[in-house]
Image 1 (cartoon, rainbow, N blue to C red):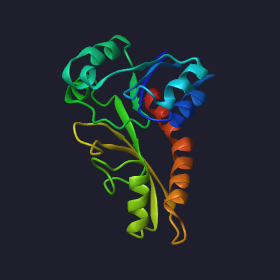
Image 2 (image 1 turned 60 degrees about the vertical axis):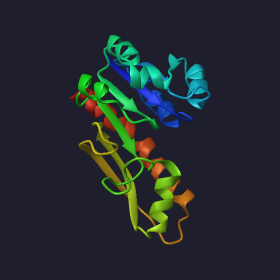
Image 3 (image 1 turned 180 degrees about the vertical axis):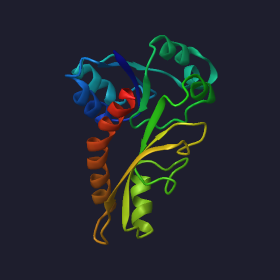
Image 4 (image 1 turned 30 degrees about the horizontal axis):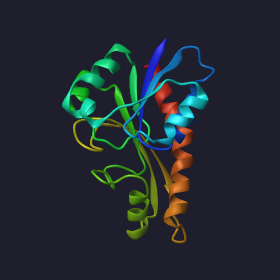
Length: 188
């Protein structure tokens, strides 16, 4: 049985998409979802989907090994960042080399780094008149959005696209490709 631990900060749409993708797969289980936001909508989704979900504070993440030890005890095959906004501490990167993956809503190395998430990315793409964007699934290292790229896929950006249109195109790519890439990583 392959075990996934998910980290999320927001609504949990990617968490739900991943859960739905694996729900009939007897070889993969979502061990738990962790969130750094007490009021994150992902908690409601997990409750509805019958997935264990826990809130943690920054102290347990950055200043101690508390959360690290809890996750180690779950023996995850993969830790998936699904809309998780905090930088992963070095002790996690060291404990789980090439086992932490993230999805970024742009074609890295463009539009990555601290503060580049969600609509900030899509607004920047529109402002810079980019003709394409996409998603990047990558391993996590000690720096924002600088880990080795696992997979990228592109979509066209037209000059009439609004940042919201761009976001919608990127979400479609996320929902279609992220679970499949996770599945491939678990199969290797």
